[in-house]
Image 1 (cartoon, rainbow, N blue to C red):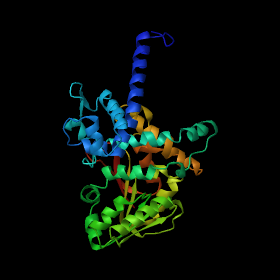
Image 2 (cartoon, helix red, strand yellow):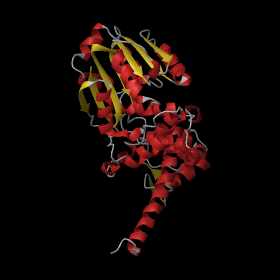
Image 3 (cartoon, rainbow, N blue to C red):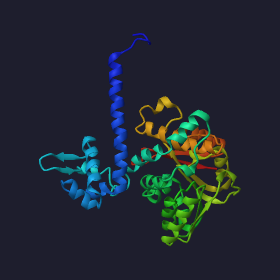
Image 4 (cartoon, one colour):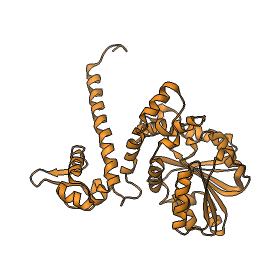
Length: 356
Protein backbone atom coordinates (compact mmCIF):
# COMPACT_ATOMS: atom_id res chain seq x y z
CA UNK A 1 0.00 0.00 0.00
CA UNK A 2 1.36 3.41 -0.96
CA UNK A 3 1.65 6.24 1.55
CA UNK A 4 -1.15 8.19 -0.15
CA UNK A 5 -3.61 5.29 -0.46
CA UNK A 6 -6.58 5.74 1.89
CA UNK A 7 -7.23 2.81 4.25
CA UNK A 8 -10.94 2.70 5.14
CA UNK A 9 -10.45 0.20 7.96
CA UNK A 10 -7.66 2.23 9.54
CA UNK A 11 -9.82 5.36 9.30
CA UNK A 12 -12.81 3.68 10.96
CA UNK A 13 -10.64 2.29 13.75
CA UNK A 14 -9.21 5.74 14.42
CA UNK A 15 -12.69 7.28 14.50
CA UNK A 16 -13.62 4.70 17.12
CA UNK A 17 -10.50 5.57 19.07
CA UNK A 18 -11.46 9.26 19.03
CA UNK A 19 -14.98 8.53 20.27
CA UNK A 20 -13.50 6.47 23.09
CA UNK A 21 -11.16 9.37 23.86
CA UNK A 22 -14.10 11.77 24.14
CA UNK A 23 -15.82 9.44 26.58
CA UNK A 24 -12.66 9.01 28.64
CA UNK A 25 -12.06 12.75 28.71
CA UNK A 26 -15.59 13.36 29.94
CA UNK A 27 -15.21 10.58 32.50
CA UNK A 28 -12.03 12.23 33.83
CA UNK A 29 -14.03 15.38 34.63
CA UNK A 30 -16.59 13.30 36.51
CA UNK A 31 -13.90 11.37 38.38
CA UNK A 32 -12.51 14.70 39.53
CA UNK A 33 -15.94 15.73 40.79
CA UNK A 34 -16.39 12.38 42.51
CA UNK A 35 -13.15 12.98 44.37
CA UNK A 36 -13.77 16.62 45.28
CA UNK A 37 -17.36 16.06 46.43
CA UNK A 38 -16.36 13.08 48.57
CA UNK A 39 -18.69 10.75 46.66
CA UNK A 40 -16.03 8.08 46.20
CA UNK A 41 -15.24 8.20 49.91
CA UNK A 42 -18.94 7.83 50.75
CA UNK A 43 -19.20 4.88 48.35
CA UNK A 44 -15.97 3.20 49.46
CA UNK A 45 -17.53 0.53 51.72
CA UNK A 46 -21.21 0.96 50.88
CA UNK A 47 -23.71 -1.63 49.74
CA UNK A 48 -25.88 -1.15 46.61
CA UNK A 49 -27.87 2.05 47.16
CA UNK A 50 -30.28 4.37 45.36
CA UNK A 51 -29.31 7.85 44.23
CA UNK A 52 -31.33 9.27 47.14
CA UNK A 53 -29.44 7.16 49.66
CA UNK A 54 -26.08 8.01 48.13
CA UNK A 55 -26.80 11.74 48.03
CA UNK A 56 -27.88 11.68 51.69
CA UNK A 57 -24.74 9.80 52.71
CA UNK A 58 -22.58 12.37 50.91
CA UNK A 59 -24.77 15.34 51.92
CA UNK A 60 -25.21 16.39 48.28
CA UNK A 61 -28.00 17.38 45.91
CA UNK A 62 -29.74 14.24 44.62
CA UNK A 63 -30.40 15.47 41.08
CA UNK A 64 -26.72 16.20 40.46
CA UNK A 65 -25.66 12.97 42.13
CA UNK A 66 -28.06 11.00 39.92
CA UNK A 67 -26.61 12.47 36.72
CA UNK A 68 -23.09 11.88 37.99
CA UNK A 69 -24.00 8.27 38.72
CA UNK A 70 -25.13 7.92 35.10
CA UNK A 71 -21.61 8.78 33.94
CA UNK A 72 -20.16 6.31 36.44
CA UNK A 73 -22.37 3.50 35.12
CA UNK A 74 -21.82 4.21 31.42
CA UNK A 75 -18.11 4.72 32.13
CA UNK A 76 -18.05 1.24 33.72
CA UNK A 77 -16.85 2.60 37.03
CA UNK A 78 -20.01 1.55 38.90
CA UNK A 79 -22.64 -1.15 38.49
CA UNK A 80 -26.41 -0.55 38.24
CA UNK A 81 -29.36 -2.79 39.09
CA UNK A 82 -32.33 -1.57 36.96
CA UNK A 83 -34.89 -3.50 39.01
CA UNK A 84 -33.79 -2.18 42.39
CA UNK A 85 -32.54 1.13 40.92
CA UNK A 86 -29.38 0.80 42.98
CA UNK A 87 -25.79 1.73 42.25
CA UNK A 88 -22.72 -0.12 43.48
CA UNK A 89 -19.00 0.68 43.47
CA UNK A 90 -17.14 -2.66 43.39
CA UNK A 91 -14.37 -2.88 45.99
CA UNK A 92 -11.88 -3.63 43.21
CA UNK A 93 -12.70 -0.21 41.73
CA UNK A 94 -13.02 1.61 45.05
CA UNK A 95 -9.43 0.61 45.86
CA UNK A 96 -8.26 3.09 43.19
CA UNK A 97 -10.74 5.89 43.84
CA UNK A 98 -10.90 6.92 47.48
CA UNK A 99 -8.87 8.78 50.06
CA UNK A 100 -8.52 5.48 51.91
CA UNK A 101 -6.00 4.55 49.19
CA UNK A 102 -3.26 7.06 50.08
CA UNK A 103 -0.77 5.79 47.49
CA UNK A 104 -3.11 4.83 44.65
CA UNK A 105 -6.05 7.21 44.29
CA UNK A 106 -6.23 7.81 40.54
CA UNK A 107 -9.11 10.29 40.99
CA UNK A 108 -6.48 12.70 42.31
CA UNK A 109 -4.84 12.76 38.87
CA UNK A 110 -8.20 13.32 37.15
CA UNK A 111 -8.24 16.79 38.72
CA UNK A 112 -5.46 17.86 36.36
CA UNK A 113 -7.86 17.59 33.41
CA UNK A 114 -10.44 20.00 34.81
CA UNK A 115 -7.74 22.36 36.15
CA UNK A 116 -5.83 22.57 32.89
CA UNK A 117 -9.01 23.12 30.90
CA UNK A 118 -9.49 26.46 32.66
CA UNK A 119 -6.49 28.02 30.89
CA UNK A 120 -7.25 26.83 27.35
CA UNK A 121 -7.84 30.35 25.99
CA UNK A 122 -4.53 31.59 27.40
CA UNK A 123 -2.67 28.58 25.97
CA UNK A 124 -4.36 29.14 22.61
CA UNK A 125 -2.92 32.66 22.56
CA UNK A 126 0.54 31.23 23.34
CA UNK A 127 0.29 28.84 20.39
CA UNK A 128 -0.20 31.88 18.17
CA UNK A 129 2.16 34.37 19.75
CA UNK A 130 4.54 32.44 22.00
CA UNK A 131 5.18 33.35 25.60
CA UNK A 132 3.54 31.52 28.46
CA UNK A 133 0.84 31.41 31.13
CA UNK A 134 1.75 32.65 34.65
CA UNK A 135 1.44 30.59 37.82
CA UNK A 136 -1.32 32.92 38.98
CA UNK A 137 -3.66 31.58 36.28
CA UNK A 138 -3.69 28.12 37.87
CA UNK A 139 -6.11 28.55 40.74
CA UNK A 140 -5.89 25.04 42.24
CA UNK A 141 -2.58 23.71 40.96
CA UNK A 142 -0.71 23.81 44.28
CA UNK A 143 -3.68 22.13 45.96
CA UNK A 144 -3.68 19.32 43.41
CA UNK A 145 0.10 18.96 43.53
CA UNK A 146 -0.15 18.66 47.31
CA UNK A 147 -2.46 15.67 46.87
CA UNK A 148 -0.25 14.25 44.12
CA UNK A 149 2.89 14.40 46.26
CA UNK A 150 0.79 13.14 49.16
CA UNK A 151 0.51 9.89 47.23
CA UNK A 152 3.89 9.61 45.53
CA UNK A 153 6.41 10.69 48.16
CA UNK A 154 4.93 11.91 51.45
CA UNK A 155 3.94 8.42 52.73
CA UNK A 156 7.35 6.94 51.86
CA UNK A 157 9.87 9.77 52.21
CA UNK A 158 11.11 8.67 55.64
CA UNK A 159 11.09 4.90 55.22
CA UNK A 160 11.92 4.49 51.52
CA UNK A 161 13.39 7.70 50.10
CA UNK A 162 15.85 8.68 52.83
CA UNK A 163 17.43 5.17 52.84
CA UNK A 164 18.32 5.64 49.15
CA UNK A 165 21.14 7.90 50.40
CA UNK A 166 23.93 6.20 52.32
CA UNK A 167 24.27 7.54 55.84
CA UNK A 168 21.50 10.12 55.42
CA UNK A 169 19.20 8.71 58.11
CA UNK A 170 21.99 8.86 60.67
CA UNK A 171 22.93 12.39 59.61
CA UNK A 172 19.33 13.58 59.92
CA UNK A 173 19.03 11.97 63.33
CA UNK A 174 22.14 13.75 64.60
CA UNK A 175 21.05 17.10 63.14
CA UNK A 176 21.87 18.74 59.78
CA UNK A 177 20.45 21.45 57.53
CA UNK A 178 17.99 20.46 54.78
CA UNK A 179 16.65 22.50 51.84
CA UNK A 180 13.61 21.73 49.67
CA UNK A 181 13.47 23.82 46.48
CA UNK A 182 10.10 24.27 44.78
CA UNK A 183 8.55 22.98 48.00
CA UNK A 184 4.96 23.95 47.14
CA UNK A 185 2.76 23.47 50.19
CA UNK A 186 5.57 21.71 51.98
CA UNK A 187 4.06 18.40 53.08
CA UNK A 188 7.11 16.27 52.28
CA UNK A 189 9.40 18.57 54.23
CA UNK A 190 7.00 18.50 57.18
CA UNK A 191 7.18 14.70 57.27
CA UNK A 192 10.96 14.92 57.53
CA UNK A 193 10.83 17.69 60.14
CA UNK A 194 8.50 15.56 62.27
CA UNK A 195 10.67 12.43 61.92
CA UNK A 196 14.01 14.18 62.53
CA UNK A 197 13.52 16.89 65.19
CA UNK A 198 17.24 17.60 65.60
CA UNK A 199 17.63 18.69 61.97
CA UNK A 200 16.64 22.08 60.55
CA UNK A 201 14.52 22.37 57.42
CA UNK A 202 13.83 25.22 55.01
CA UNK A 203 11.59 25.26 51.95
CA UNK A 204 11.86 27.68 48.99
CA UNK A 205 9.10 28.34 46.47
CA UNK A 206 8.23 31.18 44.09
CA UNK A 207 4.55 31.10 45.12
CA UNK A 208 3.65 33.38 48.03
CA UNK A 209 0.36 31.47 48.40
CA UNK A 210 2.13 28.11 48.69
CA UNK A 211 4.67 29.47 51.19
CA UNK A 212 1.92 31.03 53.31
CA UNK A 213 -0.07 27.79 53.34
CA UNK A 214 3.02 25.72 54.21
CA UNK A 215 3.97 28.08 57.04
CA UNK A 216 0.49 27.89 58.56
CA UNK A 217 0.44 24.10 58.34
CA UNK A 218 3.85 23.76 59.98
CA UNK A 219 2.72 26.04 62.79
CA UNK A 220 -0.53 24.10 63.20
CA UNK A 221 1.49 20.88 63.53
CA UNK A 222 3.83 22.46 66.09
CA UNK A 223 6.95 22.01 63.94
CA UNK A 224 9.50 24.51 65.22
CA UNK A 225 12.45 23.19 63.18
CA UNK A 226 11.05 24.24 59.79
CA UNK A 227 10.59 27.50 57.86
CA UNK A 228 9.51 28.52 54.37
CA UNK A 229 10.60 31.40 52.14
CA UNK A 230 9.36 32.83 48.85
CA UNK A 231 12.60 32.74 46.90
CA UNK A 232 13.94 32.28 43.37
CA UNK A 233 16.50 29.49 43.65
CA UNK A 234 18.21 30.58 40.44
CA UNK A 235 19.47 33.59 42.45
CA UNK A 236 20.57 31.67 45.55
CA UNK A 237 24.13 32.26 46.78
CA UNK A 238 24.38 29.63 49.54
CA UNK A 239 27.62 27.62 49.57
CA UNK A 240 28.45 24.22 51.12
CA UNK A 241 25.56 24.66 53.57
CA UNK A 242 22.93 21.94 53.19
CA UNK A 243 23.57 18.28 53.91
CA UNK A 244 20.44 17.30 51.98
CA UNK A 245 18.78 19.23 49.16
CA UNK A 246 15.45 18.08 47.75
CA UNK A 247 13.81 18.99 44.45
CA UNK A 248 10.53 17.11 44.30
CA UNK A 249 8.94 17.32 40.86
CA UNK A 250 10.30 20.84 40.56
CA UNK A 251 13.39 21.19 38.35
CA UNK A 252 11.58 20.86 35.01
CA UNK A 253 9.28 23.78 35.95
CA UNK A 254 12.15 26.19 36.55
CA UNK A 255 12.72 29.14 34.23
CA UNK A 256 16.48 28.57 34.42
CA UNK A 257 16.96 24.92 35.43
CA UNK A 258 20.66 24.81 34.55
CA UNK A 259 21.41 27.74 36.85
CA UNK A 260 19.24 26.23 39.58
CA UNK A 261 21.18 22.93 39.40
CA UNK A 262 24.50 24.82 39.53
CA UNK A 263 23.27 26.73 42.60
CA UNK A 264 22.12 23.47 44.21
CA UNK A 265 25.58 21.98 43.60
CA UNK A 266 27.19 25.07 45.17
CA UNK A 267 24.84 25.02 48.19
CA UNK A 268 25.32 21.30 48.86
CA UNK A 269 27.66 20.32 51.69
CA UNK A 270 30.67 18.32 50.38
CA UNK A 271 29.40 15.21 52.18
CA UNK A 272 25.74 15.83 51.35
CA UNK A 273 23.29 14.43 48.80
CA UNK A 274 20.94 15.96 46.24
CA UNK A 275 17.65 14.09 45.85
CA UNK A 276 15.70 14.96 42.70
CA UNK A 277 12.29 13.38 42.17
CA UNK A 278 11.26 13.91 38.57
CA UNK A 279 9.28 12.39 35.72
CA UNK A 280 10.28 8.88 34.69
CA UNK A 281 10.21 9.33 30.93
CA UNK A 282 12.60 9.53 28.02
CA UNK A 283 13.97 12.63 26.30
CA UNK A 284 13.00 10.94 23.01
CA UNK A 285 9.29 10.95 22.13
CA UNK A 286 9.38 7.60 20.31
CA UNK A 287 10.53 5.93 23.53
CA UNK A 288 7.48 7.26 25.38
CA UNK A 289 4.87 5.72 23.06
CA UNK A 290 4.22 2.88 25.53
CA UNK A 291 4.60 4.99 28.68
CA UNK A 292 1.48 4.31 30.81
CA UNK A 293 1.04 8.05 31.46
CA UNK A 294 2.75 9.43 28.36
CA UNK A 295 -0.15 11.40 26.90
CA UNK A 296 -1.17 12.80 30.28
CA UNK A 297 2.38 13.89 31.09
CA UNK A 298 2.94 15.63 27.73
CA UNK A 299 -0.41 17.40 28.23
CA UNK A 300 0.43 18.57 31.75
CA UNK A 301 3.82 19.67 30.42
CA UNK A 302 2.35 21.73 27.58
CA UNK A 303 -0.42 23.27 29.67
CA UNK A 304 1.59 23.92 32.83
CA UNK A 305 5.25 22.94 33.29
CA UNK A 306 6.55 24.28 29.98
CA UNK A 307 4.34 27.35 29.80
CA UNK A 308 5.04 28.69 33.32
CA UNK A 309 8.75 28.53 32.52
CA UNK A 310 8.31 30.30 29.18
CA UNK A 311 6.18 33.00 30.84
CA UNK A 312 9.23 33.92 32.92
CA UNK A 313 11.41 34.09 29.82
CA UNK A 314 12.78 30.68 30.71
CA UNK A 315 14.00 27.59 28.91
CA UNK A 316 10.60 25.86 28.78
CA UNK A 317 12.15 22.50 29.62
CA UNK A 318 8.83 20.75 30.24
CA UNK A 319 7.90 17.71 32.30
CA UNK A 320 9.05 15.27 29.62
CA UNK A 321 12.64 16.51 29.54
CA UNK A 322 13.52 12.89 30.21
CA UNK A 323 16.05 10.86 32.13
CA UNK A 324 18.73 11.30 29.48
CA UNK A 325 18.51 15.10 29.57
CA UNK A 326 18.30 15.11 33.36
CA UNK A 327 21.53 13.12 33.67
CA UNK A 328 23.24 15.39 31.17
CA UNK A 329 22.23 18.53 33.07
CA UNK A 330 23.19 17.09 36.45
CA UNK A 331 26.65 16.25 35.14
CA UNK A 332 26.91 19.71 33.53
CA UNK A 333 26.18 21.25 36.96
CA UNK A 334 29.07 19.28 38.46
CA UNK A 335 27.27 16.34 40.11
CA UNK A 336 28.86 12.91 40.26
CA UNK A 337 27.86 9.38 41.27
CA UNK A 338 24.34 9.87 39.91
CA UNK A 339 22.03 6.97 40.75
CA UNK A 340 18.45 6.49 39.55
CA UNK A 341 15.97 4.79 41.87
CA UNK A 342 12.32 3.80 41.40
CA UNK A 343 9.54 2.92 43.81
CA UNK A 344 6.98 0.21 43.04
CA UNK A 345 3.93 2.37 43.76
CA UNK A 346 5.10 5.38 41.71
CA UNK A 347 4.83 4.85 37.94
CA UNK A 348 5.15 8.58 37.33
CA UNK A 349 8.54 9.40 38.85
CA UNK A 350 12.10 8.28 39.33
CA UNK A 351 14.43 9.39 42.10
CA UNK A 352 17.88 10.74 41.25
CA UNK A 353 20.51 10.74 43.97
CA UNK A 354 23.62 12.80 43.20
CA UNK A 355 26.77 13.80 45.05
CA UNK A 356 29.34 16.55 44.59
